[in-house]
Length: 173
Image (cartoon, rainbow, N blue to C red; front, side):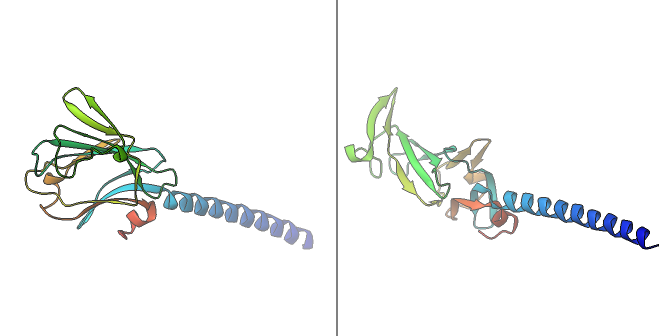
């Protein structure tokens, strides 16, 4: 009888160890997934879109300049630390207020009928927009394009930020 009890105890201990290992692996996988950084586009009333925030992931914005009434495109990348962004370059069609042109802004060149300021390398912890009337503000992520005029009221705050995935799951942005 004692031998049978010992064998049963060993079986239970083995089952408990395997169960504990399985639970630990699942918990680690959930923790890893929950802490992965995401590039998030967030409106005042919720999440508009997100994608993985790998270092170097590029996205862009396009809008109509409020003064010049011409298109402006800005190109960004997720920084190496994956905690913010870098403004890489700007493409626009006319000079004016708020558009880069100084040698300290980057490397200026013509590209067809557009002007490009490249090599800007401006660090930004997050990017904020307030879409205006007739600005046609659009954010282009690697797999998605968001026309803000179709998704948020004019003048509302839209943020682009790097957040851990768990904050998106819990709406804590």
